Structures are given as structure tokens and as C-alpha cells.
Length: 406
Image 1 (tube, helix red, strand yellow):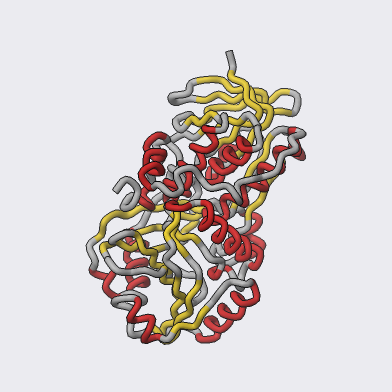
Image 2 (image 1 turned 45 degrees about the vertical axis):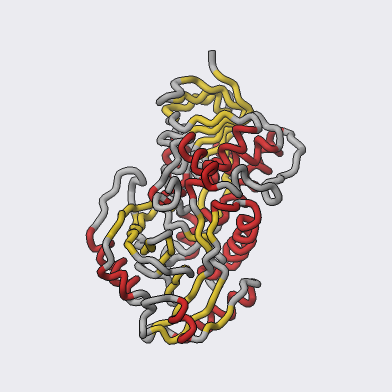
């Protein structure tokens, strides 16, 4: 017999887990499925930066404001899923000083706290900071541990009645009468689901998932490399203050730092080539800010794929700098109970989930408010409990492997 559910959420990254939690807290019967364990995709393969919005202040004001608001919210509710490091934007000798000034003004206009830091003070606070740093400004960036964040959302959803199936790849969908009637799951689940409503939250795989229902979502995924190297003592996130380019961020992780990243278009988010030049360029460019990383021993290397929405990227141009998100209702393509959630950032996952859950609740006639901005995640004050959730949902990603369970 098929298993019935009011909402089937496909995709166990931060957005999918966040949507599942949000709906479960509103009393909706919801099932979350993923194919490889939670946080196996873009969420768990990020560099772990909790954005302040400063990176997008001049290029994407709406996205910058969303990042700032969600940064503050996660600091309040996510506990040990977040590490408050602060961030520095640094201008090197080769960088355009006008860009630094424009960044500062844009941050002030968006309400992002900025503080110009004396360069000597910056060097005292960052061992090994390059002698080429001419100016620096402090912003409220932080570090997020995505494996913990995703698992905690899933645990709260489960505790409020949701089914969470971390090894349940979607194999097919059947349409009937303008609706998705059944969804076939493989893996450990191996079952048929009859959903009232379906949410596609599969990040860079959203186009492939939508195609199972014979609808279209135009994605423009790009790959980026992250390299963890040994370096102890870095507290703030380092951002190079220039137009976005390869190797312009250094993120502190325990006794290591993560260097990132590149941006290379890929045709297939699950089958793509990688290149040695990405490693070499990322290390070389990050070393212009922090020279000791050039020769530091490597701990691990991974690539992630960004879930960029093609129409938005085409409208903005540039290097995938937009971080807006979109809720795409496929009713205009003849499927009345199917929506895709695309774009966005790990930092804004909760807001994305709220907007998507609002949409689903309107479709289902559910009148219940979102509570996730004010409700602590379970285990927020207990790292061991958070790490136990990660184990339960097979949710360990490379981004925070040096912290989770250590």
C-alpha cells in the first residue's frame, strides 16, 4: 500500500530540512527524503561562512539584507551550529581603493555594521596577515557548521511528527489529472508515496528533479573548490575587498582554515570534471591575504556545486554573485501540486523555508504561522547532542568534518 503524506519534501539539505521543520511545527503531515544522507549536497559542501551580507551589499541589496537578518536570527536560535568569529574585508596594494569605499558605504546603507580597523591592529589580531594589506574593515561574518544545522532541523521536524528518510532517492513521479499522484522511492525506503503536495528543494539538482514531473527549472550550476589547510589562530573570516574572483575568502575552522573558491559552470551537478588549476589558483590568491597558507599542509579538498537559478544569473551577469531565492509554482505548466525552491544561500535557508512553507500552507488551506525565527533548534546548547543528530541522519559533510564529532 502506498504511504500517504500531505507534503513530500525532496532534498535533505538546509532548505529542505528547514521546510520540513517549518511545516511540521505548523502541524502539517510532512515527509522529507534525500538520496545520500542529509547535507550531502551543496549545504554540506560549502565553506561554512555565515554571511553578514557585506559580500553582496553593493551588488544585491535585497540579498544582503536577508543575509544580515538571517545571520542575526541563527546566532539567536542555532547555538553550537554557529561560531561567532567576525569577519574582515581587506584591501591589498593591488586592489582598487574605490571598491573598498563603495563596499563600506553600501554596508552602511543596508544597516550592516562596519568598523574601519587600523592595519597594525588587524595584523596583531591575525597572525601572518599580509604586509600588502593597506586597509581593513570589520563586519559581523561568522562560521556555520552545516552538518549540525541540517541535522538539528531534521531532528526537530521528526520530533513533531515528520518522517525523515535520508536514503530514499526519488526514482520516478506519476502525474494524473494535473497533479503528481505518486512518487516512487528507492534505496532503504523502497516505497510508493501518495503526496497531496510536493516540494522540490534539491538545490543544483532542481532541474533534474523537476524533469521527473515533466516541468522545467532552468539552473546554472557552478562548481567551486574548497581546500582545508593547517593554520591555527585565525579568528575572523578574511574576505578580499575586490570584485568577486577566485580565491578571495579564508574561513577559520578549528585548527585549520578553508580556502575558497572558484566558479566554473558545470553541465551536470553530479558528474563534472575538476582541475588542478583551481587548487593552485585558490591557494595562490588566498595567500595574498594570508601568506602562511601557501605552504601549509593540506587536510582535505572538496568541491561544491552552487544552486544558481539561470534566469536570475542571466539578468545580473557577473560571477554568480546573486543570492536571491525563488519559489516556482508549476501550476502554469499543468502541475497544480508541485513547487520548486531555488537559489539562495546557506545563510538564508530559514527564510527560504519560511517563504516556501507559507506557500504550501496557502495551497493546503493551513492557517498557522511560522515559528522558526524564535524557536531554538534542539540541542543548540549541546554540541554532543547535535553531533548525535548528524550520525542519526548520515549527515556528515566535508565542510565541518574537523569540528563535528571531534
